[in-house]
Image 1 (spheres, rainbow, N blue to C red):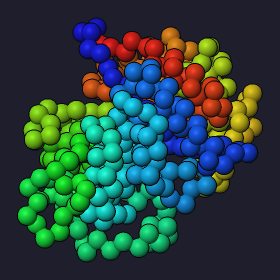
Image 2 (cartoon, rainbow, N blue to C red):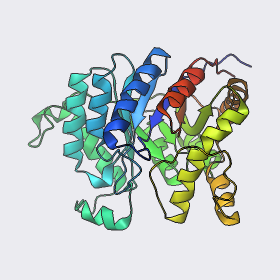
Image 3 (cartoon, rainbow, N blue to C red):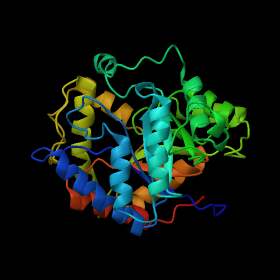
Length: 331
C-alpha cells in the first residue's frame, strides 16, 4: 500500500419504492445526503432519467437545489445532465443560479445519452441545429466563462462562475473527449462495466492538461451495499437484482422489497445478464466491501470512487452509507 487515500462520493439514482411516492424518495434523499455529509463523503450527485416509473430524477437542477439546501458543506452535482436534452444556455443559467446560491459546492457532470428511450427523447423536442456533444460543451463553457461578458447572448446568472465540469461516460468515445478537453472523467461501471479498463487507459494516455485540470482524474462509479454480515447484505441486494432484472427484461417496476431468495424470480438468461451488468457490485460486510473496494481502486488507479446503493429500506440505506463512510480506503 502506498497510503493514497481514496475519496468516496455518492450517486443517488432516487428510486421510487413499492408502496411509496416520489415525495418519500426526496425525503429519504435529504436524510441520506445529510448522513453522507456527516460521514465525510466528497460529493453527492443525482442523475437525469425520463419516463422511468421507478426513478424520480428527471429534473437534476431542481434536485441539486433541494439537496444543497438541506446540507451545508458537501459538494452536490449532476451525474449527470444529459446535454442533448437541453440548450446549453439553459444549463448555464440553471447551474449558474445554483453556483450563486451554494458557492463552491456545485459540480456539473455531463452526458451525451438522452437518459431515456428514443420516443421520450423525441418528446423532449430539442433541436440542437446539428451540434455535436463536444460543440455543445464548448458553448456551455463559453456561457459560464467571464470572457463571455461582451457577447450578445449571456448566461445571467452563470457567467463567470466557471463551475467544474465533468465528462460522464460508459464507452471509449467519452474517454477520448474527456482527455481531449482536459476534464475529469466519471465512468459508469455501476451499469456498463465492459469497457471500464479500456476507457480509463484511453483517457490517461491521451489526456491534455487544461485550465481546469493539470493531470488525469478518474472516478469510477460502482454498486455498494454494506450490512452487518455478508448474508444480510446479499439479502438487501435482492431488491437491486430485481430492479436490474426489470431493466433487462423491459418490465420495470417500482423498487421491490428484499426477498429471502432471488431464485425463481429470474430465468437463466436474466440471471447471467444481471450478473454481467453488476460486475462491479461490492456487497457484504464492512470487511468484505472494504477489501473489494481497495482492490478495485488499486487495479483501476482510481482517484476517487462513487457509490450507487440500491437498497429498499431507508434505514438500511443510511446504515450502509455510514459503514462505507467509516472505511479507510487507500492503496
